[in-house]
Length: 413
Picture 1: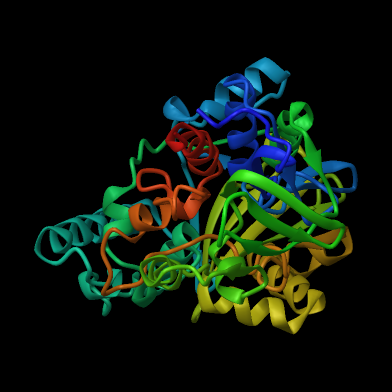
Picture 2: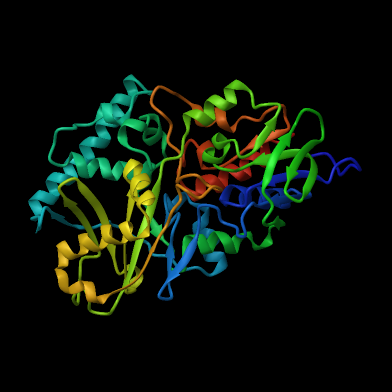
């Protein structure tokens, strides 16, 4: 257990970051009777969980799906807090490739290719766990580009940037349930019981001696133990200065787990814009542009897609108008030019250039092994680390981050 309060410290425990990991750590600390505070650089809780509104419709700019739902604690949390969600049993879709709808036999061909891609990755993992996903795939098929796009959504990096260890150690259940009021809103609601100090950016952490000194814009806070939950993007940026510098093995794990990028694009629209019964899910391909488009989630007049990997970085840099044109052009190609007049409000996320996040979620680089376990290890029994990047089974997910935060408190002697 954390030692009792001493006169020389302000808190036995300080948690840095109020995303899902920081919230998980705070809730676990509270359950364990550990006095603590959560320092959050921004004005809100949730981190990469963020729900905003398009024409009054809640939309998730960050985490959206309760992945691995039967093992995801946020399902029970949603029930307890009165949030609704959709139990999607089968993800069905139609495919619009190069100007026309594909027939069912072509869908099945793609599905077989997709299943074969995952098998190839698993097979290579047994031979070389540090190889890249790209090395495992059939990269000469007509389906290759679309499959590469899917990998970029799953891991926010491109196939040549992802070690096969990540997808092979992820505990997949194929249960991905969206939250009607927003996953980000759920995480923010969960945080209301946590002692969070907002607008408090941590600039330096001095763990030379005990107690640890945490330097913020509002002064110095002293603590026996610190749990760091910021992203690997923030850690690698040098935005937080560690004194002394983190040990080489810790810096190696941060370097080996960079954030990629992934953004959502949303349109609201007038009722009837896309006809009486548009497909709920559309896989779209036009030359080298791939998309997964979701129509009317929860019956709302909203449509969205998402980008991943290097293309997500590039498109974000082009600005909001480019992201709008990207989605609008695809919708026009599918449904015709008449839909333009029915499109209303547009919204897009921009995680790559958010200085308090610096990207979407982490991928282990090819050439490395077990870096997530290494990132999770404490330093000098003073600094503890949590976040999706430390989760072996549930990396890239909100519930993986949440569980890692709880686990980090359990590690404190």
